[in-house]
Length: 127
Image: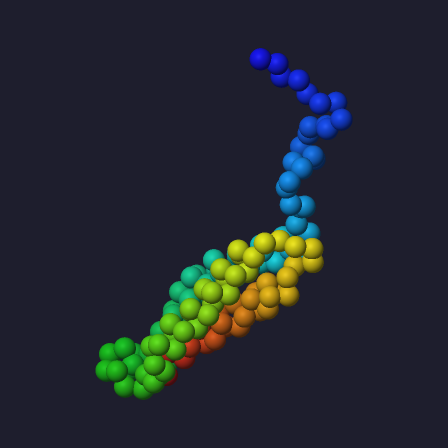
């Protein structure tokens, strides 16, 4: 067995294979990183919003007697989470291009908007 190396094609860490896609731009990497953190930080933000909602004036009445609670239907909470999840998946799974696809930027801002609406719903859930 011979392990000959071609002298015309250098191997090294900075050399991509012939059929490989080009490296993503810094803007695309930044968008992916920001969307990843935005999605992951929704859980602690929801916990914090829930604690703040329970610290409100009407929280004891709402939790104890179900009086003065928000009348927002539960499907609205789920709809905002579904929109946020779809936008998050689109932002993370869209292939990197230079510059990033316009739909990817729109999905990122949709993700931020849906998360803000969801957190606002959680904050106002106890009236």
